[in-house]
Picture 1 (cartoon, rainbow, N blue to C red):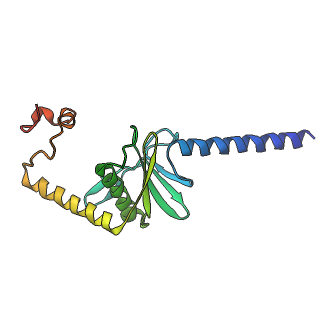
Picture 2 (cartoon, rainbow, N blue to C red):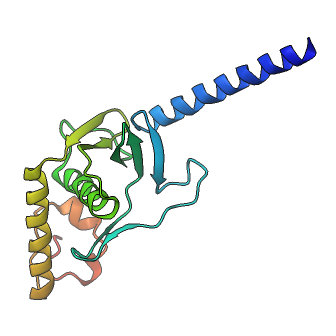
Picture 3 (tube, one colour):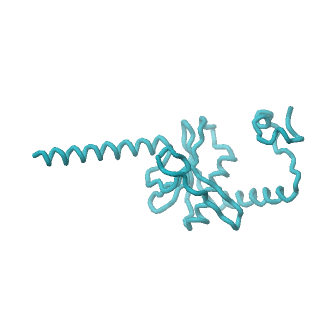
Length: 173
């Protein structure tokens, strides 16, 4: 009889731990599935190596990669509250991770997720988004070769937080 109660106790503990891990995964903005990569220490694992494609010279570390139904889904976690729609920069960051997953793991993600504090956005990884990303990467490569590139905004708050402000000749005062 003691063995029976011990077995029931172990099963109950396993159910509780499984339930808590599901809640933690949902709180992190992750879809159901198996977490196969993490760039955070919140899950107690070591931080993975970045994804890298030498042909594009592209490197990145998504916050999470989740395997769901044989597909790999990148998840990017943002610390602030959600805007009405995700910022273009966040969409292209996620698209970069989708591209890196395809290039390094051989599996094209159908979508990725941007997780904000109060809302998630599933972004379809379409051919149009991929082509727009590749255009941006090509433009960045051209700018690297040009040497001098003009500031791309008129936002004084963005300018004030820039890490290059101390050497920038185009800063907004």
